[in-house]
Amino acid sequence: MERQIYTAEHEAFRDTVRTFLAKEVLPHYDQWERDGITSRAAWLAAGRQGLLGLAVDEEYGGGGNPDFRYSAVLGEEFARAGVPGLAIGLHNDIVGPYLTGLATEEQKRRWLPGFCSGETITAVAMTEPGAGSDLQGIRTTAEDQGDHFLLNGAKTFISNGILADLVVVAAKTTPEGGAHGLSLLVVERGAEGFERGRNLDKIGQKSQDTAELFFHDVRVPKENLLGERDGAFLHLMTNLAQERMAIAVAAITAAEHLVEITSTYVKEREAFGRPLSRLQHIRFEIAEMATECAVTRAFLDRCIADHAEGKLDAVHASMAKWWATELQKRTADRCLQLHGGYGYMNEYPVAKAFTDGRIQTIYGGTTEIMKEIIGRSLLG
Image (tube, rainbow, N blue to C red; front, top):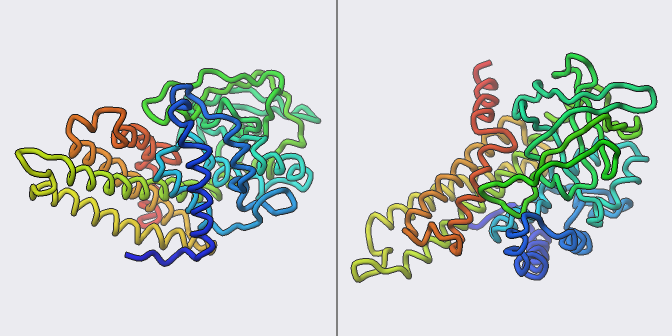
């Protein structure tokens, strides 16, 4: 079915993204996977190409275009290329709204030019060893010391954790914490007492540096408070819909691409003297997956269009996130099975897609949390 949500300008941007991937990412990606981290040079190249800070005002070096459809195009092309390690989506769609929506004028002038050029790589630190989806369980503390906060605690599973020059940290600014006692503090590279732990050894997305972060009596200037004091819970909830949409966009695109490459494989691979595609079971498998993707794509495109117009609510974002990511997981498993023994080999894209995509149903809010959000909206 012909998609209706993109204009000629969006498709021209798609060509730009594909050119960037072909020149600056794909030739180096295998090495990044071995290294466990991407190159800062790729971030600078993304900045030069105008792929960073799409929604940031032009006066700070950004694209000046808040239309989410451009972010969706970027996410689709990265997913189709199978290169989640270069976490531009995290930078643009998750951290970006905190800076553009909450930062003061002084903070914007201090942080956004580097954000857009690729000189300042960002991360957001919410998850802790004992607190994942439950933000009310955050234990990291920020004690008011007059002209600064004294930050203590630990975070884990932080994407861009090794490379990040600027980290948005959620911490308790009241003893109770929770919905009315969390604040967002920006910690910059080089702050005394800010330490990075291991670059965590994951089963997939090897080149996406995911780290432990430690804060030991870190003096965070009051000028680095982002948004309202004790207002982080609301700030976080406000921006989660876009995070979940970005994940869902990548998920449906990855599922579609898996069906494409598997369809090609079963037409070329022979068994019992004929192509696998001649077997009814194989045709039914492909037919089922293609139909699931088509139906999901129709819903996702509606969500993308609604979000671009500021109309998407948290419930529909949660629906999109859990459904699309579970579809991606299921499709990766089925496509690997159809590849047989070759599907288990890392040289085949389906094997990498199987491990890279497994995190999708977990981060950004687990499938179970998404269902709880939806269920509460329907049943109270």
